[in-house]
Structures are given as C-alpha cells and as structure tokens.
Amino acid sequence: MNAGFLLNSLAARPQSEPIDAVKWLYQSEFGCGHLLPPEDECAARIAQEMAQTPQANPEPLYEPLGDGLCRLNLNHPLTRALPPVRIARMMWVTDGHVRGTRAGFDTKLALLAVLAERAGTDIARAANEPAEARLPFDARALAAAVRAFRAAPPSPPSHSETYRRAYAPAYRVVLRRFGEALPLLAQLEARLAAHGRAVLVLDGDCASGKTTLAALLAPLYDTNVIHMDDFFLPFAFRTPARMAEAGGNVHYERFAGQVLSSLLRGGPIAFDAFNCHTGESRPQTLPQRPVTVVEGSYALHPRFANAYDMLQAVRVLLRVDGAEQRRRILARNGAAMLKRFETEWIPLEKRYFQAYHSAQAGTLTLVSERHAEDEP
Image 1: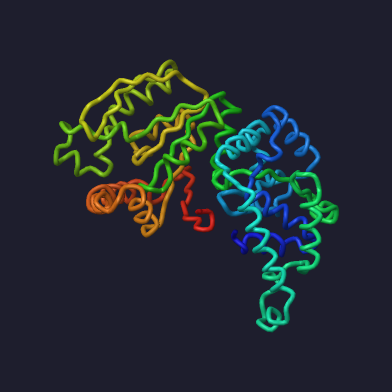
Image 2 (image 1 turned 45 degrees about the vertical axis):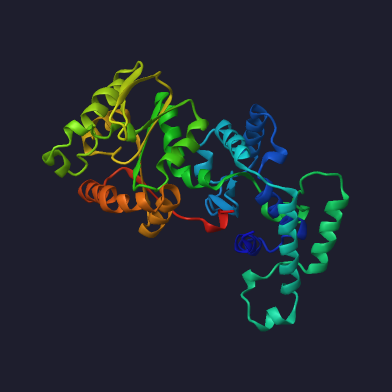
C-alpha cells in the first residue's frame, strides 16, 4: 500500500470518515470489478452521472490509488471528451488486469490501523509531522468502521454521507495508464468524431512503453496495430551511406509505399513484415479499421509527415529517463542485450531524435516514469 497516496487524498478531503478510507483501500485492491455491470449498462450509468455532475477544472484528472490503478474524475474536461462507452470499456479492460485478494485487502486495513494509532499519539505530534501526514479520524473510529463493515453482508464499502455532501464524488476506477493517456485519447476521439476514423502514432525512446501503450489502448476501439519493428531496413539495403542517415535504419520507403498509401486511399493494408532476426519477410494483410495505431521507434520519421498531415494523425512522442530505460531493458532483455542496446540501437535513436524531434510542433510528449509503488 502506498500510504502517501491515501494520506494525500484524505488531506485534500478533511471531512472524510473512516469508511471513506476503507473504500479507498478496497478500490486499490479490487479495482472496479466488484461493481461492474454489463458494458452497455455501465456506459448508461456513466452518461447519467456525467449529466448530473458539473464540469470542474480544479479537480485533478486522476488520483493514483497505487497497484497500477487510479480514480478517473468524471468532471474533468479531458474525461468528458470521451464518450461514456469508452470509459466503460476502460473499466472492463481494467478488470482484466486486477488480481486483488482478500488477504491483500486485510493487509492494507492493518497498515491503515497502524497509521491511525500513530496519528493519535503524542509522539507523532511531537515529531512535528505535517498536517497532511495525519488521518482525519482516530484509531477508535477506524476500528468501529471496520467492525461494522465486516459485520455487514459482503459488499463493497460506500462513501459516507458526509463525504458525498462535502465532495460530490464522481469518478471511475481504471488503470493508471489510462489516466496518463487521456490527453492523447481526447485528441483521438476528436478525430473519430470528425472523420469516422483516426490514426495514432507512438514514437519514442526504446523501453519507453510504446508497445505496451498500444496494446493497452487497442481494446478500446476497433483497432489495427502496426509495429515499426516490421519495417527495419533489410540487410541488403544497409549501406554505409544509408546507415549514416539519421533514421536511415528504418525502411521508410516500404512503410510509406505500403502502409501510408493504403491508409490514404482506403481498402486493405498489405505490407511485407521484415524479421530482423531471420532476415525473412512475410506478407500481411489487414482490413481497414476505424483506428490505426502505428507504434515503434522511427514512427514519426519526417518522411511520413505529409501523409500524417493528410490523415490528421495524432502524434505522440514517449520519452524515458536514461537510468529507467536501462533498468527496463535489463529486466526485459538481460545484460547481454542491454550492452547491445547501449552500443548500437540507443545511439542510433539519439541521433534520430536530435535530428528531427528537438522541437516538433503538433506532437504530444509523454514522459514514461517508473511507478515503484505500483509494482508488486
């Protein structure tokens, strides 16, 4: 349990009662699955709640719960840019990722009890703890609330009436990465509403989460995902002159001629997927779908810019700190491959970014960070 997240939430809402903290812990452990109706009914409830909830800019877009989850605020303008069906779909995707247990919830309750005991002692006050580090209730009140919750028929805890009157909560529990992706999703929805189709391009540092984000967003729509790994330059074309180009190690001719031309004219997308390990190519054909996600390094190569302009593509650059990048590559690929990344592929990417992406207008930049508190 990340006590900081909980304490920050309670500090922002000093009229919270013990059951509100219990609900927070319940959601951080079990997510939204405990109250998830069928998807169409879920969307209808969200639409109704949005209609009854005024838009409020001061509210944060989302509040982290830890364990990879967040409360997505329904009164935020970016959330309101999404149709209710999309938020309902987020909840269903989230439910597939949550693996909460009763034992995990009980452990969190025990830790909360320790915090409540400590907050009520003279030692805590003598240590000059900041007000936000203290609970707005004492250990006795918390123990009574937990006993009442356990004695009631099994069901998720509800917010206290005091909390509801004071704060009018309107949110849904979803994966934290959905909250982080809301700026690009709002742009994607605008393109879909205007044109009936949309293209999302995810470029960025290796190990910045491009493939992971594409896989997470794909189930929200009727989607094709196209990987730039399939468009690395075949060995026969890797001349010294070509490899000296910034971004020259991607087969931009094939990607433009096969993928972008198909997206522009409509109809099936037929392309040759190159396997850089075997040197072989295999033909692939994808039907046109409302959303196309292009992900991978070099996806925003300037040779594609005119086509992306015509497609009104949503362009996103994912960046990651060097130390975190190395940690991820080591965990994913091992020490030997990390060495190759550091000596071969990362320098090529850096040259590409320095040449083309120091200040690219119209591109949304997302910084991929490690959320250690979300890890098991």
